[in-house]
Image (tube, rainbow, N blue to C red; front, side, top):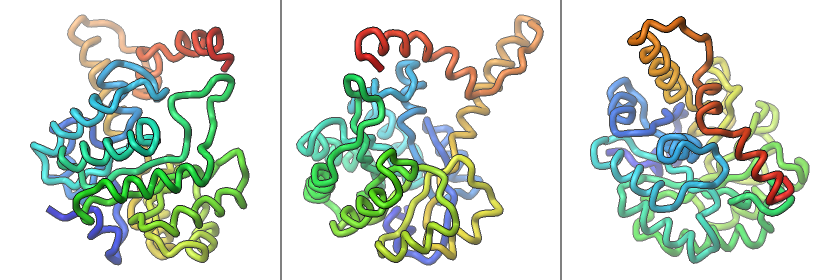
Length: 275
């Protein structure tokens, strides 16, 4: 099995498959994907029917990853959120994911779960850098990749984003992951401040961008959870067909939002957390 480190240090660019169970990972590998991503939002929807609000536990994530990795040869990148706590919790997460068979983890500088009166808090730069150092110390094999993740649309602005990337790149992390719509012109600036391989999570990206991404040093792209959303929509229609109901034209994303009770949770968060 190829490791994510081989992709990060190689010369090619690969789109990643969003996978959510052993079957999806097996299919993705069979059709030709070179890596898969287990996203926190998808695990949340599958495990406890919640939105991506930081409500799943470390054990729920790790159990999902273990089931996938036992059955699939596809190298798996795990969305590790913010490490499920402080630096010590992050070390535990690294140990669990590496033992479960994952190939890499992304660790983001968002503060999760949501903070009182602040849904979009970012960790202090020094705190997240030290968390990355703790993660690197915890891994047993250098083939298990630690990828630092931050946001392109950070409320702190683009200069602060560059400062964060520069600081994270000075650790021995294996790559930098940026969430948000990165412009092709931004890649030159990013490569000037960091020599680390890039992973992008950009829902607006398409196949026409692949050549430019490769030229800009991007190694891996996740452009959404399309397979999961499509499977949800197909399931919704299949159940309607069995009962001969008239089909409601609704997207997979809207179905997930509907059944994960986002509106109810938002009301609760407003009442008790002033969000």
